[in-house]
Image (cartoon, rainbow, N blue to C red):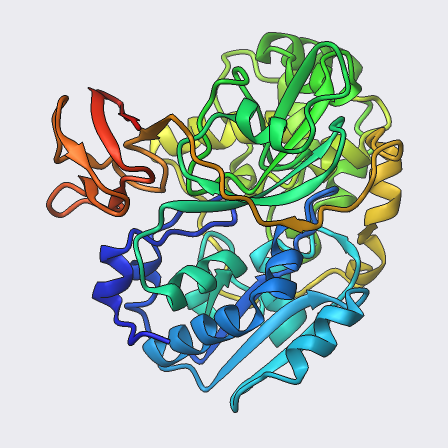
Amino acid sequence: MPAVSVDSVASCGVVGAGGGGFPTHVKLKAKAEVILLNAAECEPLLHKDKEMLRCYPEQVIAGLDQARQLVGAEEAVIGIKYKYRDVIDLLAAKLPPRMRIAELSDSYPAGDEFVLVYDVTGRIIPPGKIPLAVGCVVINVETAYNIARAVPVTEKFLTVAGAVAEPLTLRVPVGITFSEAVSMAGGATVADPAILVGGVMMGRLASGLDEPVTKTTGGLIVLDREHQLIQRYSRTWQSIARIGASACDQCSFCTEFCPRYLLGHPIEPHKAMRSLGFNMVGEANTIGTLFCCECNLCTMMACPEDLDPKNVCTQNKRRLMGEGRKLEIDPVESRPQLHFGNRRVPIGRLIRKLGLAEFENKGPMRETNYQPRRVVLPLKQHAGAPAQAVVKAGDTVKIGDVVGRPAEGKLGATIHASIAGRISVVGEAIVIEA
């Protein structure tokens, strides 16, 4: 494998491929005791990480070990669900020194990094902090793969699942449309398809089939527009707040299922729901919602009234952050609730609850050599500030050429051309015509 440095990771534009998009080179500047590979992949119907481990175990292991050396960690741990026995056995035979596998439960949200760190190390990340606060760094499977390759990130792995003819995992050029990816899975099997990007629990509703695949697109779940999940994601905030204020009976199930509450964090979603009916001036007053991880268990699984505590918490959180308000945390170490282990939601049960049991729950890797005629590369497809274009309309580029760079002193990631061709548009996104 090529030699890797923090600078080379930055120049290749590697970001967190699990959805967050945090620039990886910034993480690798830190020093940690343990580095964890998050291979839990607990979103229903998604299989990208598991398939990558099956197909590219050497590259992923090498990238994780290189990242371990960069952060100075004594140990690297691969967190993967115990049920993937074949993948575990495959990896176990290839592990280098200072690396081990931690088998995780088949539950949601096993992939939440706070839950992952606790399950693997027994350490609880304090409220409002990051894994580094307890000596840990967490990276995604595809991120480790990209670290090992040490070439510009111009391709993306993603699962296409749900109402498609053939659910599968693909490697495609960054910038192709969702429609092109769905076509590779045999096309939608419903007349009026809609797409949830990134997963049914923590994803979002796509604005249309012509949206581009970015470095953080981990999966596309195709559903009929009348499906219960699409209807839920289509609700307006006004509707969520009005119905929540009138119908919440304060059963507190949302709090009892909240993984951060169960880890001992000061968050109680039922109190955010209470604020809807007893907040006459509209201010954000449930400070604990700052620690909401937006896993959506409260809404999708816990609430018996079909309300939306997650969106109430996130609206409250965003307003509090905008106002600069914080909660003074008791320095006493957080302790998990006694029933933490018994409140985990089995994936099979979650799939049935969400109305997804009719769909094939697999996504085998299929190698393609798709050559798009056009790609759209948003200048913001990572955490931080948008990249700044370094090309202009009419320029010609090759695959891997830099088309956007972070502004001086700003958090961001470099963006590279994913096809060879001519720059036709430079704006919030760069368009390349083959």
